[in-house]
Image 1 (tube, rainbow, N blue to C red):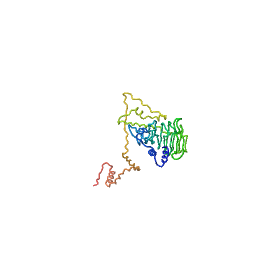
Image 2 (cartoon, one colour):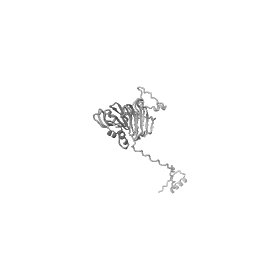
Image 3 (tube, one colour):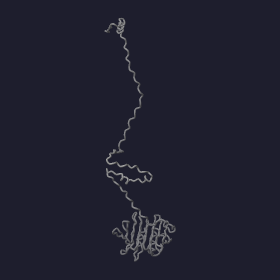
Image 4 (cartoon, rainbow, N blue to C red):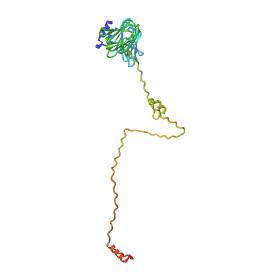
Length: 324
């Protein structure tokens, strides 16, 4: 079976998925012990599964994709767990035998496996195959990036078996000891960084966003200064050294104070005011007109004769001469 598995993994890069390889390798038996169970609220599950009470039981083969910001935990029937990290996808399958080996395939993302491993079990990525050299406890964190970088953190105890890594496209091999933390660049066994420090497993859970409370104040209901200060503190101003405003003394009971209330409103749709017409230019002041003088009346001939007789007779008696 191992030879067939190694031969079948080669064409993965040519478009054959790992799930299809499992279907070809595993003979499904309805009476066989199931692989394990996973909670449906944290993942989407497909394959030979049965669902009951929000738990999916995987019979002989299935696929698990963890939800966003969730870790899907596959509890194995043999004992142990496989944690599928957020948005990651794995395929699980087992052969039809008395002690069936477990086959795990990580398409992308990360997983954390902790269970009793045997030499027949296999963990696969698009580029590499991992097998234990003997039976023992396995505690492995694994991550595969889109460009093929494979991060491996073997957290198994010191007495755990070695992990034998082989390439899906060549004869290269590599042994990983317990406690080693390394990176296979591009999924290649010839480009290995054995001083890797980045985490290979699931990222820490992100805190749920805290909803911002929205306060609705009923129209016409006043807000006291204490409520306003509690709802709108100003720590920035205090930290900048700005002193708080003056405190107004309370008004004694019975004393009347004048209060002025006004309302300021702005209407953006109101027509703009028409500017007043320009003031007329100042005209030079007019000179006052001289009063018209009445021309002196010309002397009358009869008046002159009257004045003549007046002078002769001395003005004792006036002699009137009419003009008729």
